[in-house]
Amino acid sequence: MSPTTDAIDSILLPTDGSDGALAGAKRGVDLAAMADATVHVLSVVDTSAIEGVASVLESDLDEQRAALEADAESAVESVSSMVRDRRPDLEVTTATEQGTPFRVIDRYVDEHDIDVVAMGTKGRTGVRRVVLGSVTENVLRTVGAPILVVPPAASDEPLTEDTVRNVLLPTDGSDGAAVAVDWGLALAAAFDAMTHAVYSVDTRRFSPRRAPSEVLSELERPGEDALESVRERARERGCTLTGTVATGPPARVILDYADGNDIDLIAMGTHGRSGLERHFLGSVTENVVRNAELPVFCVPMNAT
Picture 1 (cartoon, rainbow, N blue to C red):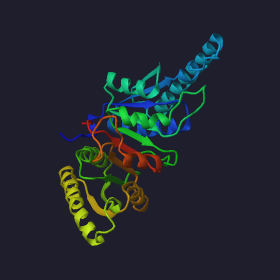
Picture 2: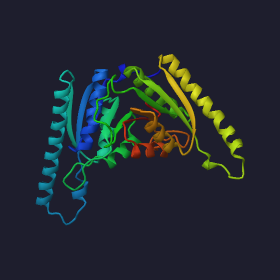
Picture 3: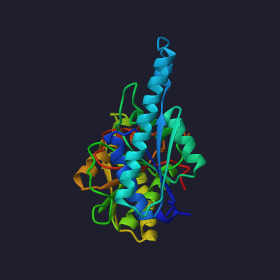
């Protein structure tokens, strides 16, 4: 069964009190408002940085742990206040926990049946801060729910029908890409947005001794098949779609297409033809997330 935004009942907003975390939380609230979902705000106290230093006195350790806990509670309160100010109709659940951030987030998602996680790509660093940012990539590798990733350069405009006009759906014809396409189409339908599909023909993998026309002809055929599959899914959803086969490294093709076509949101899988394990993040998705200037909705294969 294809996903719909009606299936989004709960959204998790991890936070460390940073501007990056707040940016991710704001866009998560936008999705929650669209789906009328419950919002969970979580801050993780990562004490491993100070506990691993043998020279730290027990009294100093307690003091620094207390400071971390205070930071976490402040971060949760800041985001939960933002949610209530922006959308007082949404139900908000808050929590602070201790442990390795990405592991705690993964466990929280499983224990609370979270449907979507929304988070920034840049957070605080330093012993006295709850770390977010580098955590994001680990969350992408481990969490079994879709992750809305919001980079620092993303617009502060809310995600609404007025602002989300174009949604990009990269595909490589794999099962992982198909799952992400279904999620992307569901979001596009909710926002009444135009959908774009792109398939990248990466000729770097082929011998230079072969004629360029021969290589392109060989690679464009599966690309057209992949795009037709997306078109069929779009027709079923009642979405308007334009698709293209482009040449170049996949991540660069996706980013250039997004920049050149006023894309407001990218939806793509975390697993493509290069791997199927849950803990594997496709290098293409990883590169897009690291370099994008707009939100990226990352979908694991087991997201339904």
